[in-house]
Amino acid sequence: MGPTAYVICGRPVLWDDLEKLPTDPDALRARLVGKDTGESAAEGLFNGVEELLARSPAEPRLRAALFKVLTGIPGARVTERVKDSTGRAGTAVDLDAGTWRLRLIIDTGAFHVLETVTTARNDGLSWGDAAAPGRGSPPPHHLPLRRARLGGAEAVPADVAAPPLGRTLSSAGGPCILRLRKH
Image (cartoon, rainbow, N blue to C red; front, side, top):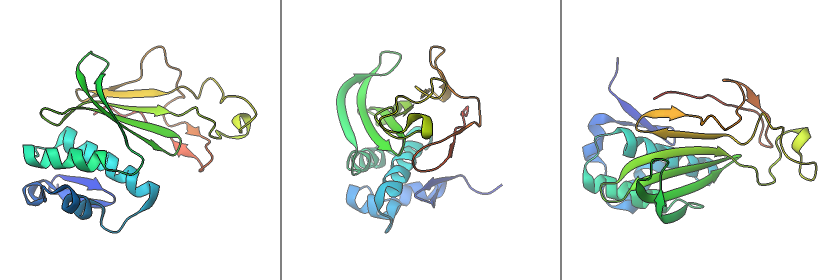
């Protein structure tokens, strides 16, 4: 088995590389993203920073820089003084990525992830022929989907309708596979 790696925008960041990453937010963003641009780069950076904040032994200065990079992603929205599903206070960073809304709730004292939430958006996006704009809502077994990861466990609350594991959802950007994972 090789060294532990985190993948950000398609680039591996090895466990041993963490101490070599710059703590200046602009230099860190350049190192993590390279020349990638556009929505896929924003989503890849958001997910990569989430991985590093939630699962790496990054030092406090690197965590602070990662948070600044996260809040500087084009399209990211920051809301202070929100509560996670257990009532802990933090700062939310949201990003719309295709048909999904990604949310991280961060403890800005230690820059640790309190909660990760991925929600299927229901804001006029086309979810196949049955839900094309002007034709009503997506089928009820597709939305809403809210997936939360809290303390390393991932759950879909009981009151939320979700398609079966691995079911293909039709979206305007093409099919996407929904996979619910435990971490």
